[in-house]
Picture 1 (cartoon, one colour):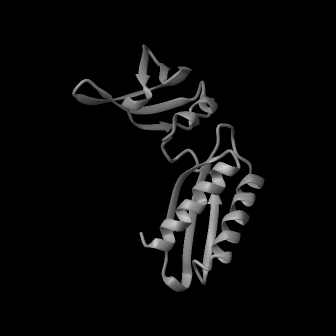
Picture 2 (cartoon, one colour; picture 1 turned 45 degrees about the vertical axis):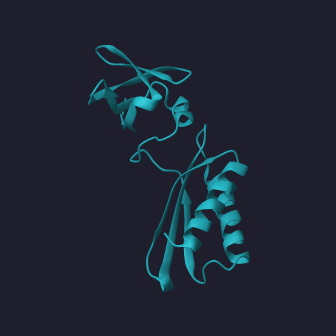
Picture 3 (cartoon, rainbow, N blue to C red; picture 1 turned 180 degrees about the horizontal axis):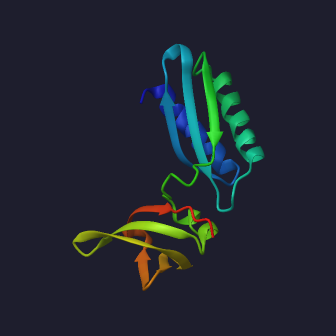
Length: 149
């Protein structure tokens, strides 16, 4: 990633934090003449389209003021259910939802599907045919599964 993109990443991080959100990912693609910047943000509660628009305006303003890119399209959105959760503070809003979890168990990794039943400090409790408690730092990948119940 070149210096401008690193700087844009820092801007996105800062703008998200100023709005009580957090940066999940920043993807830069396309050529110099048709650059696309995708910014994925999340919050402790579900985020709205208005919040995405506000963050987009603030990031664009700084990119333009600092003349970091000449031509670009900026897309700001929430990560969506297809992206794994990466921060502990993303989990509370998904209580009682079905997850697929890959986690470290002793010397190996294990996969488990279950509903997020509770969160205590950094311990997440999932329920299926059995209850399993997983320390957040042991989670390799956590994905919310779409269910139509």
